[in-house]
Length: 472
Image (cartoon, rainbow, N blue to C red; front, side, top):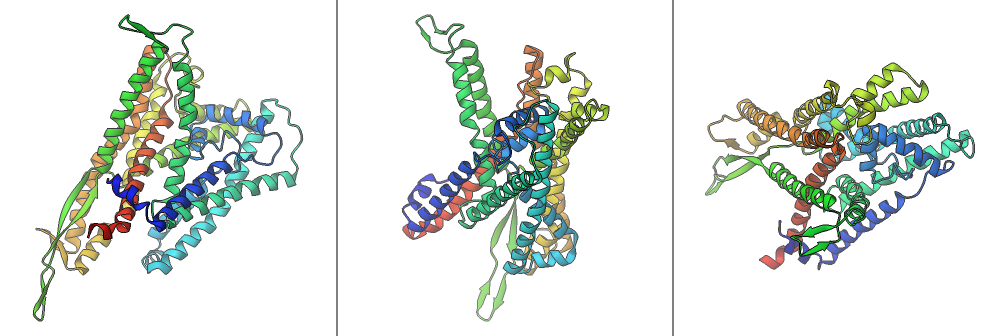
C-alpha cells in the first residue's frame, strides 16, 4: 500500500472532491445518529434499550453496526440491516432463478434493475423491523413498570415508524453515494465508521480507570511513581499487545491467497501473433471475507431476541428462558445470572454453535460469489487455460477442488479467530470468576481490519489512476 501516492493524489481536484464528499456524508451520518425517534421521552426508551443490549447479543450487535444508534434511540436505530438483508435475499434469488441470473449478466442495464429491486425490497423490511423494535421496546418499558409520560396513539406509532424507515432509507442512499465516488464500498465504509465511532467512549472509560490512582500508583524500579493504576496498567498493556498480534494475524490471513497461473493460447492472424502470454488467477484463502461472521452472529442471536420478545409478552415462559440461556453469548453482564454455579456444559453451547455456523456460512457464501463453471467458461472463451488442465468441465472441477481446500483452512481459521474472545472469557472466568465479554468486540475487530484493507486497496487503485501521468 503506497500512502505517498494516496496523499499525492489529493492534489487532484477531482480526487479531493470525491474524498470531501465521502467525509461530508459520514459527518452527516454521525449527526443523524443522535437525532431521537419522535416518540415519548427518549430517556425512558434508552433505559429499555440498555436492558435489551445487556440481555441480547443481537441487541449489542445492532448497536455496534448502527454506530450507537440503538443506545441513543435515534432515527437510525434500524440502520442499514434492511438493505443488507434485501441484498442477500436478492442475491440468493438471482442465483436460484436462471432468468434472473441471465439478467444479472446483461451488462449495466441488468445490474441496475437488480439494484432497483433491492432498494424496493429494503422499504418493507425496514417497516417490519421498525415496528418490531418499537413494539419490543414499548413492551419492555411497560414490563419494567416504568411510567410513560403519555400513551402513544396510532399517529405516534406511524410517525415513529416513518422516521425510522426514512433514516434507514437515507443511510442506504448515503452508502450508494459513497460507492459512486469510487474510493470504497459505501455500506462497508458506513459499518466501519459505526464501529470506529464507539472507540472514543471506550478509550475514555479505559483512560479514566487507568489514571485513577486512588488505590495507589505504579512504582517504576523504585525511582519514581507513574500516575497510573498498577493493575489497570498491566491489563491495558497486555491487551494492547494481544490486539496488535491479532490484527497482524488477521491481515496475514485476509491477504493470503493461492495464485494459479493462466496461459493464453498463441494465435496467428496474417503476419501478426496474438496471445502466448501468462496471467494469474488469485484465489483468496477467505474469499467470503467477514460476511460469515456477521451472518453467524445475526443468525445465532435471533433465538435470544425471540425469547426476550416472548418473555416480554408472557413473563416466566419456560421456553423463552431456555432460548435466552442457550443463545445468549456469555458476557460480564449476564454471566452471574445465567451461570450462578460457574462454568457448566451449557456455557460451551453458544461458542460451539457459533464456530460451526462461521464454518458453514464461509462455505455457503463462497459458493455464491465464486462460480467455478462461469470462470471456466470465461477462460475458455478467452482462449485461456490452466497448465495440465483441460478447458471446460475439467477446469471447473479443478477450481472447485482448489477453492474447497482453501475454504477448509480459511473457514477453520476464521472460526478460530472468532473463538478468540471466548477463549479470553474462559481464562478470565477461571482467574477472576467472570468473563470480559469480548465476543462483539472480536467481531468488530474482524470487520474493521477486513473493511480497512479492502477500502485502502480501492483508494490506492484510484490514486494510481489519478497520478499515472506523473510516473510516465
